[in-house]
Picture 1 (cartoon, rainbow, N blue to C red):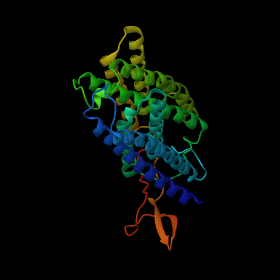
Picture 2: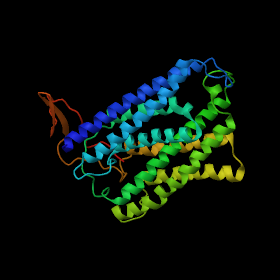
Picture 3: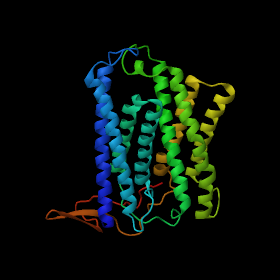
Picture 4: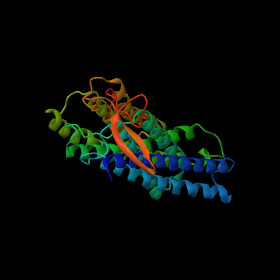
Length: 336
């Protein structure tokens, strides 16, 4: 396959994964509809409701598999082949993959299938935003990104981001359930508050050392290799450190001050807000960050699809008004 065909295959894979995530989300909501009148201690007797829940997990598993194939295809579309996180679009599809995979792993270990509606809704929304607002062509990595430290740094950052996001969902559910008096429905069937608090803590306790490795070890090493200094007061570096401080405070408060419940949940929500602001806000609102790599030195290009008989031929051509544009690389598009 040519690079253009791999790129198209990757887009088709992301589209297929998005459809599967959406169908899984619908299955979860069908299950919720069937559970709305059941109390927490009542067994699920409706066969259709139970089947919807199992179908949601199955569809999510298929979606994660297709998502992974699309990620690999994205890397194979580059010349030379590279890791699929050279811009914000690629980091988004990688991050959502880890969130969905983390959900499946946590569900297998702790039985958190009740997180399915929230996780699939988040992943579908993020993939839609990535595909519609962050779409970018496959380009070779800039010199600053062409390092094996990038692989180590981003893998650890993505893993910790997935763990923190799942932890934040658990904290959010804790806060909502703590204010609910309903005896039936989704909230009533969630685990008791102490268990929600404990699960959230476990996710944050796992994600924090990985984030520490990404922010305080591999990040500075990569920065020194790319720019000659371990610390440059770059906006993303500063916000990554702010995120580290918030999560360090969260874990420290639990260990020394005995913070549990709402206080810990609120601090966890602050942490995930700084995390996602660093990912989204800095890239879009900062013009001084060295972590923007999407400048294009040439004319805008697009992968244009031409159909010759039954075969699809993909060519990289300048964008013209009469052409059907598939992907546009904009010189001002922010990237990771």
